[in-house]
Amino acid sequence: MSGNTTGSVFRVTTWGESHGRALGAVVDGCLPGIPLTESDIQQALDRRKPSASVASTTRKEGDLVEILSGVFEGKTIGTPISLIIRNADAQSSSYDALKNVFRPGQGDFTYLQKYGIRDWRGGGRASGRETAARVAAGAIAAKILDRVGIDVIAYTKAIGSIAIDRGRMAAEKKLRTAVQENALFCPDLQAAARMERKITAVRKKGDSLGGIVEIIVRGCLGGLGEPVFDKMDADLAKALMSIGSVKAVEVGDGFSMAGLQGSQTNDEIMPGGFKTNHAGGILAGITNGEHIVLRAYCKPIPSIAKPQRTIDSKGKPRFIEIQGRHDICVLPRIVPVCEAMVNIVVADHFLRQRAIQS
Image (cartoon, rainbow, N blue to C red; front, side):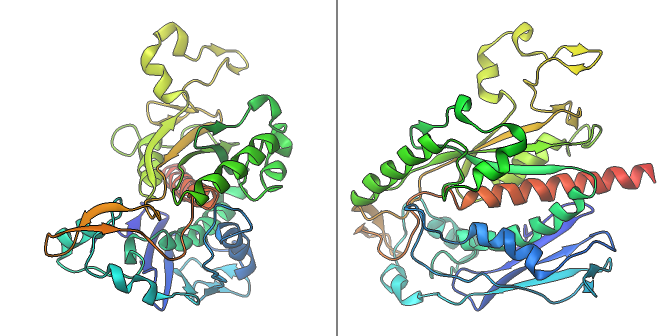
């Protein structure tokens, strides 16, 4: 199985399945001499864990990370950093009835087509549980970026049809604090309250919700990214699209630009910088020094308690109602995952540019 590694200089490989003994990541290419402890990584993982939010699963995982290599006396030493997170609350028996049935919206059908075998316990490698390893690796990337003043912050922009009102968002300097003030990682407290009520109502119906994550890269240097196949926006889109529930990615004004004219979308350049940021901080695949602005559009969780039609492994029609412990909405838990993937991509491009200039 290929496709488990991302990055060119800062390389991340994740491993493990939802109901295996453990999962983890190997991070290669990290600069030596960066202070790093397990608690640094744990802070990021704690944000991804099931929370008090009504959207979260009842599966309780401590997600306690162990650093197995690459760190000595509290600092990175330039060698591969191996991370492990042990699964503690896997209840595989909940999936016994699904062993020979394909769940609509999941990877069951396609994994069997590709490999001729699949791990039916919670989706195996296709499970959102895999993203814990990404968040752990992203915490290391964030440490690299922090040294040069680059800060990545993600938050819930919308759940279902309920979206934030930018007029009620905190000022930029207080944005991270505001995002962490509620379980949905939403910077608009009024919208967050409405989202909670919507999630509760949908849960009672046995259904699920999608939403939008907005990610801002602040303090990004100009000149990061490559001009053709490894454009910064291309790599960011790929990284976000690699997260299971993400079905579309928007950069800057994105989708809305298709219906506008050039005079409405060009960012005029003034002596003091760009007048606007419709491009989302990236031109011709290279960062221009403005904030990078991204949005990840997430589909509703496919595991729902409503009856659905499907087939079994012999092609016979079946009806299925998904039981077990599942999120109702991938937000807020996907928010730190998006943040991690952006950290990983930006750190990789920063180190690529550093290699050119050294």
